[in-house]
Length: 340
Length: 245
Image (cartoon, each protein chain N blue to C red):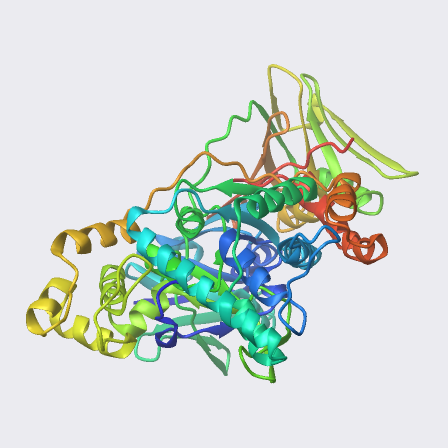
């Protein structure tokens, strides 16, 4: 989900060509959730194999990675570890919303209302431990490196960009900017059409790049103040203040300097305690990350990939093979070492 | 503040050194001269460049940064002949670089340097050192370009060797110690490099000017030489290729 702060940021349209030869760390949970929500049939049924197991995540991960490698971009995936205790509440709420959506989905199906069915179905998708493991196994077979983050995958990704090991974080969420990622790339698909959520309309989607420092400068705030703004709006770790959206929050932080001063100046219902504020700041400003990783693209094991996709997940071989050829470019990534 | 007058060929030298690796760069300007350190997008190569103020005919500067789009810069400098004088002046009010060549004036918008990285030079253990005439090396690299996309450099106790192998053809250049300006190693060192990158790195060195090479085993290479009549110094690092099975 992440903080709803996007409208304040200036985005710059880019192309895959601009990312050529660059390392992009992708928030794995973020994309897998995306695939599970969007790769579905018209009535909202996800892709399934003949055993009835969902394969949307596998299909998406395979196609997406192939397109990136074909464009000579170097993808790395960063997987979530243990969630922060403060996120537990958000996760519980999401779980409840999913159960509700499930009921509404089944009802809509029964009534033959496919539009509602698909919309509701998208809200039911769950990323299970098994799916995460299947995704990691596929990446191993593809020779694409992945990193197990101690906590938030996007915090790890942001750290790697800050350190200079990667060019940008690939995610739809803006949270990595709060964590201090210098560059965020959204819509990591080569220019394509995407269905607008809940509508029968399509829009052209391009990759977009958001630079943290430039945006902070434009907004006239510091990185710390951006985090404070997010606390007022609401994050994955707190509810935020009723009635405060991005614009109001920016205005209040610029006027008062920080969250504590804002809360002293306004009359807020259920404001976070000072201890909570301190803890949330720590999540964004001093996240738990690891230096234990190597970025090595080790080359595709065609046989293994076919085994996973065709034997395990029952993909048709003739549909897999054209995508598989896109990985030919990976040889270039393997033989050439990098300086750091 | 930055206000300088310089022969076009000095600027052309800088462009030859930097452009093949990076397009958007940050020049650090000080009263003593200008410098730059940048890594290519793939993190395969690094360039470190220093030009002393006396390489310029006139030079006045305070500490500052200039963010330059090298393609744009090259397009205007290319319009001058090598002996033309080029005037460079930073216009603080509009954040532009004013480039004057004769009666031609180009006002060039600068790139925002906030957020542009300052890469650190990695610590490398490169036990073998060779100094040779650029022309000798250039010949070997040129010959290899048509044969393969990578070449092997080997420093032995008594010679320096360049070898490239394609499907049907090979290229070998062996230079014994007495043809080299310097050779220093205790043991054989060998590493492979992309010809694309390596060829671009040695291109800016003129004819018989000396070029210094330091290598290890499957380690990056360090290439050093002077430009701007020895008033400028260039250091390149290039990560190796690894042997294919």
